[in-house]
Amino acid sequence: MSIKPARTRVAPSPTGHMHLATARVALYDYLLARKTGGQFILRIEDTDVSRTVPGAEQEIMDGLRWLELNYDEGPDVGGAFGPYRQTDRREIYHVHVNTLVDKGHAYPCFCTPARLEAVRQEQQKRKENPHYDGTCRLLSPDEAARRIASGEKYIIRFKMPREGTTIAKDHLRGEILTENKQLNDQVLLKSDGLPTYHLAAMVDDHEMGITHVLRGSEWLGTFPLHVNIVRAFGWEEPVWVHLSVFLKPSGKGKLSKRDSTLAMTDGYSVFIKDMNELGFTPEGVNNWIALMGWGVADEDVLSVDEMVDRFSIDGLTPSPAAINFQKLDHFNATHIRLFTTEDLAARIKPYFTREGLRVDDNVLLRIVPLLRERLVTLDDCLSFGSFFFKEDVSPNPEDLVAKGLDATQSAAIAQRAFEILSGQPAISHEQCEPPLRAYVEESGLNANQVFGILRVATTGQKVSPPLFESMEIIGREKCLARIKNAIELLKKM
Image 1 (cartoon, rainbow, N blue to C red):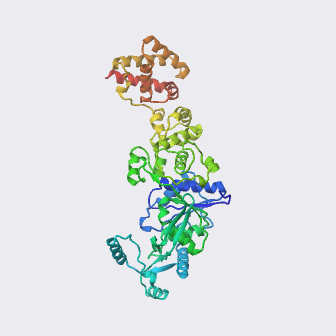
Image 2 (tube, rainbow, N blue to C red):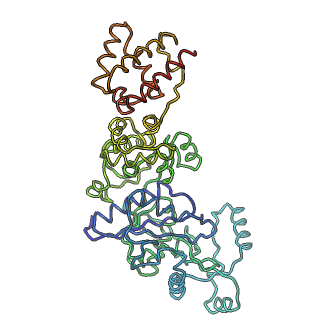
Image 3 (tube, rainbow, N blue to C red):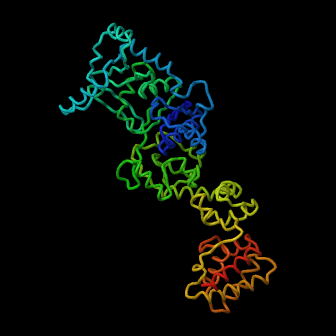
């Protein structure tokens, strides 16, 4: 890979939630820019005004920052190559489209939607692929100018070459050859004066000095058109990289909106905003998406800095990547274990406070080592640790009944444990475990029976972090009060 600094861009449309496909493009763009000492840019492609969703642009910026993919230039940070919203660049596109018209590479088209629909239907009857029939392509410049001056509504189309072939080079796939007769005269400028993607993206990439264009493979169909537009201007082409497509978790077929909905029912999502709210970490998400399209070992646990050191676009692969949410769990859990106690405490604290729990920071720091190995997502802290911050717990009475015993027998065990613990000046692992284990031995019970009752009584749940360490943090008075409550519940059964 060239050591020349790369200028890369992620250019999403604000038409919905930020998707992991956008996040992956952004990550690769970021890695390439940082690897080469270049710049990573955010550009908002908002020319499809009818589909723009309020708040979507902010969600994109928030999502990139949550992923810690901080861009060097963008709508909210500025830069020497702005504006960074396409709707703010209208005059720039007009200048360039007029250049194409003057050079004979584009032309005004006055065909009405009704005529275009009639042409399309006739082509379908003849079993032809729908395409523009070139009526206005034949107009003389003088005739076109006269009709524009008279106020007639028009658009601007690109004049594709009709003869020969277009050879476009994709960095991952090599040369792609297309017969020009198969290509269409696509719209560059709409009747409202706004450009289509085909014009705007090519102009912006040139004007902003973009050296590498990484984008989804869905653009391969119009790749020959884009190459022809760049060449019509006489510009140097960027390095084109069309990334692999995402497949359903089954590996069969492209990921769809329905798959996204189904994923949410299992606690997953393909939208970055949801991933944040579901308790996934930026480190885990970045690691997961990085390896879906990058030919490195799919078990490699990497920080973004480590990815920068290893990254090369030569290592990317065009092979489709199946979404594997179990891999996301793996990477997320692994990164959680790498966080410092202080860092992990800061990350899980909001999940407790959102539930209305009052969090003592000293207690939080003490429970992190007990929770760390049990967390797959950050919000798992609630199921494993909420009881630490509650005054009381409400165990299911049936869970207090030990296996092989009845409620009366279980109540007697809880009573004896209460008496043993009451005789201790404090509840600590060192002080409490020996006498309780001695009770297990002399009673003929097994440890699971006795400690199972204590676990449910003191934590309110059947599964928890280590019992004695948890009881020590809960504290003597709370533990005794909770065990006494459990005894009363068992007596009522």
